[in-house]
Amino acid sequence: MDHFHLTLKQIRRYVLAWMLLENVVVVASFWALSRYSSLPLWLDAAACLLAAVVLALLCSSKVTAVATQPLKALWQLVLHLSPDTQSVAAPDMKQLKIGHELVANLAGQINQLITVADGIAVAARRESYDLHKNFIANSLPLPLIVLDKEETIVYANEAAAAYIGQSSDEMAGKNVYMVLDMSFPSIDTFDTWLRQAKQNVATATGSWERVRLNVRDNHPTRLFDLASYYNKDNGTGNETMLVLFDHTKQYSQDEQAVSFIALSVHELRTPLTLLRGYIEVFEEEMATTQNPELASFMEKMSATAQQLMAFVNNILNVARVDADQMQMELHEEDWNKVLTTAIANIGLRAKVRGITLECTIAPGLPPVAIDRLSLFEVINNLVDNAIKYSGKSQIIKVDAHLTKDNMVETTVQDFGLGISGSVMPNLFTKFYRDHRNRAQIGGTGLGLYLSKAIVTAHGGHLWVQSKEGEGSTFGFTIQPFANLAAEGKRDNQEIVRGAHGWIKNHSMYRR
Image 1 (tube, rainbow, N blue to C red):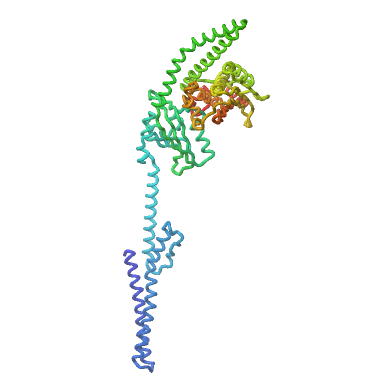
Image 2: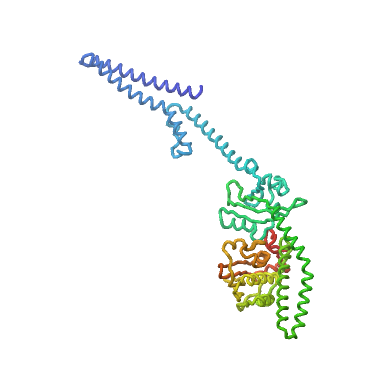
């Protein structure tokens, strides 16, 4: 017999028992009153009727309480299992007088259904977390790559597979740096950002421009902007997300433009070298003459030749940076001597413009780790810019000192035109020049771009402060040699670094 019919049978028996009990009591009461009472018969009947009503109420209350126990227990069980009312206690099955088997069976069925529902919900959540089945991730037209906490690729959509030249299955399970051989235009690389994010924050976003993807086989080179999102200990296991925005055509055109200019400018080096040689010969010959006018002409010619040579060097070095062919060997140098020599070399240009260079070098500066020729170019570019934008001012101040962070800092300050706030964000961008004075003041828009690349590759920082109409101050820092001595001794070789351009994922690297 099933539990439901068994419960019905138990309820019928219980109701029947109480009905019989009620009838027996009413009949017995009427008999006793009629036999032993001296009251009229109609009063005996009325008393028995009243007793019957009271007994009926008591019996119905008792029968209802017992008969509805199974329903009450089920109601209590549902409330107990409901996520919104879990504070309700579970029913005590031992207290059930009838329907015990029915309630126990239904409770088991409900628990089983809940277990199945939970399993379906978990499976649904897992499926929603499975990016391989995610419509948006698979349909995204941008290359998307997802990493776990070990920086292993757990997902790459079809756009990423086509862009990189590897199938999604081939990329899955590999370390991201084995698949994405990325090169960045500064020491601010993806792996540096991710390492710092893991140490310091729970979530973070990062973006990089002009990233180069060094691809394998005959797959075309890719140039793109990169955006990344990090979420520490993500419950899905998808901790880091990378999205690639392709700009290969645009960035390649920029590189080709620089390469074409560099090829053209390269042809100027030989005649320019001959010209400077002849100027030096004439200067030596005229040293014995007393013709100040001719001496002035030669000074101006020499200064112009120096400026033209600086222009040529800037173009060629930017081309080397963009082709990842510029290397710098860091040696121990006396910054006092290096800076003094550099200022002396560019002093003629300042003299021709009627400008005085005031150089102040703090005593006791520690030896620095630099590539001398590269730093000469930085100083040359900064002072040359100060000369161009000095306006009517006749003084440029050059100062070298030690910072609180134990870095050697050099500043070049002019008191001329100054720089507009709208120009500042783009100041170190390649080819950028202020549209308001580009017609009056010559230049290529490459000097600051190249200088920042060189200073960054030295482990330093190039900065600017300016107020329009009051002049500008450019400063850069370089590291003392003592900070890098251990690095060189460890590998028993010179410290060789690539400049700006395309710096590998692990930034400062040796060749």
